Image (cartoon, rainbow, N blue to C red; front, side, top):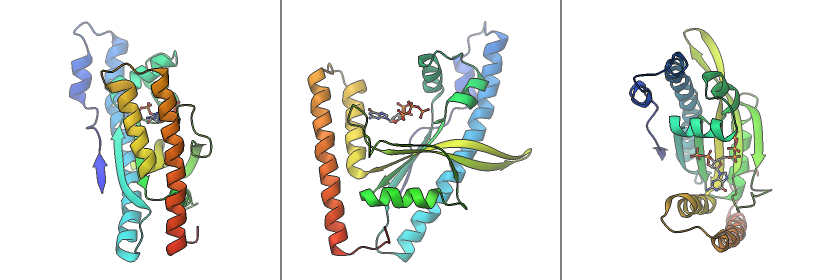
Length: 230
Ligand code: 0O2
């Protein structure tokens, strides 16, 4: 199953955010954003198409698929600007290409822990995509309790000017890790309640409990019928 989480940044969004008194720099940013949007959407399509091909292969050829579902999105313009500002970087197109590696983002929700590393191997074989950066928040979870494997992949796209390489962030996680991350994000940033230190500590404990469950589910699965050479 493929889920596109947000619609893309379009020219209309960009024009709406531009005041009538927009400076040349703001206009340049607006025009540049349209190209950023097109290029990263293209890279996202290539990465998602590859994942879809693998998903269909598992579904048609094997009893077990490592992929539960896939979500993908282009980062919103507000979110890109917010990230640049948090890093004290000037909001311009060059800094987006140079510093924002998750403009195109794919989340692969896997069934079991080993599926995550199996998918990593498939996505980073020589004939697949290069790895620009890898951060394993499963082996070393964030202080919040966040667990996932993050890959920044180098994805080639062919456009009229030739071949371009763009980064696509792939977050690989189990269903349980995804449940934790979604609810933690909701509780921390979106709900009206005050998020206390005690809430943070309890969520950290939930993350540990979930990690234990993931390991046990993996063991139950492997004990029954291992499908892959993991
Ligand atoms: P969104 O809405 O998910 O796009 P980088 O992007 O790698 O250059 P950054 O932002 O420090 O630098 O990367 P990091 O921390 O490795 O990964 C950021 C993304 O991971 C976040 O995206 C979340 O999707 C997820 N994430 C990281 N930490 C947590 C956490 O504690 N809780 C939850 N729920 N998710 C987390 P963004 O940029 O926040 O936005």
